[in-house]
Length: 619
Image (cartoon, rainbow, N blue to C red):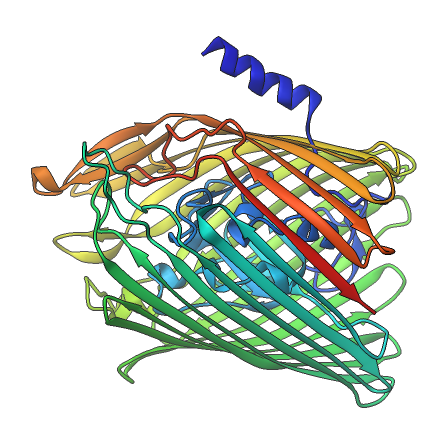
């Protein structure tokens, strides 16, 4: 045991960055998601993590869940289990229900999902340009469910040439094959982008096989993903961008913990819409419409949902120091049959003040009207102070909400049409510092989140607003771009949480962060050996977690389980030639072949696995 701890510690100290930009760059990124207009991270008091295009390019052997799982304050349950197993996003200890997924700024929602959460297996990494993770309650700008934060997935755009293309082919452990192709370009007033990816794997047994026979079958997974985007410059002030995306996957799944079975599932997503941007002298007007249609079949049992999102918002510079954001938003949710539908309409505004002495302030509010529960209001107050363009002190006080989902209001199990929204208050504060040349940054953040009117499921009464949730924690992150060749990153996150459950006249409080580690450590190092050769290594450490096992041998009675902590050591390398037009790469995960742990009790994890491949760039 001591030897293992020494190896992990040595890796943390001497190793660390995975996929940082391989060219020397500023760590003060320009971001959009924090305010719905472009600004540097140093100019906002909100906490934003950016996953760059370079990081994604060097994650060819991973999926979206594994890339997100590497970020500070995030853990994705199932990221290292069977590739086709369902994934759960835990941002700052909150469940998937409290994180909003955006695709190019437009929400992705599956009304048939538990709590309306979206299945990230439907999103192929190949189509993604960059990701911005906005932490803390963001309901003023992004509405329902943005209690823990927002993940904005920004898809690939066309280049400036008339035509450019790329393709990649990979093969790896578990007979895993991935092939993707990208085509894009710009011709006068028209630009276009087309992406396709195919992924197929035999996988591993989803359930852990502890029997003496050891004959559980493998549970495979296959996915097709297509994305098409157009950009039409109607004039030098008006741009219209229609898009269409389709994903289809199928796979096998087991009956549960330690229980093999030949179950089958299929799932598909149609995501289409249009974005418009009208610019004028002092600002712009943005128009977005998005439509999601998701279908899931588990052993033939159907789950279908439709989601409509329409939004218009104004960005207007009132002066050099005052910026106004104001918008209107409509969302419609539907599940078959036709009477299971609801809608949410909102008006919101935020005002941004920029002082000449480094003081910045955002003040905003949002009014929401739901066709079932009525109205509610959210707010945010976000002051920050930037000292000498190097040290930022920030505070964020905000409220959030989650509207009850269609399945909770009208679903087949325990539906309650009288549910109210869950409400939250979030307080966070911290400091972020950069060196003068922005090559190094340090971030320290504390957060405290309280949720009331928590929607809980009672086996006798169904869904009801009953509980309270209180989570708090802190995060620290260090980034250092030492030179054009060497970059380092290290982070630590702590979270704890408890639920207060009201039953009768008695309140019971207990810790409840199921499958979420209190402590996580990430460390990465990347080195550009020469113009052709890049190598990186990374270590992830997760502390022990709690889980609940519904034991079929004991009438499915809940049994608490403690999942051991674990550490994973990974490595990556690529070599390019012909002026970077051809690149060979290899991605090695779980180098120490760690298999004696659970992400979810009773379910398998991947041991040492490797993916290798080749990428072509054609200009």
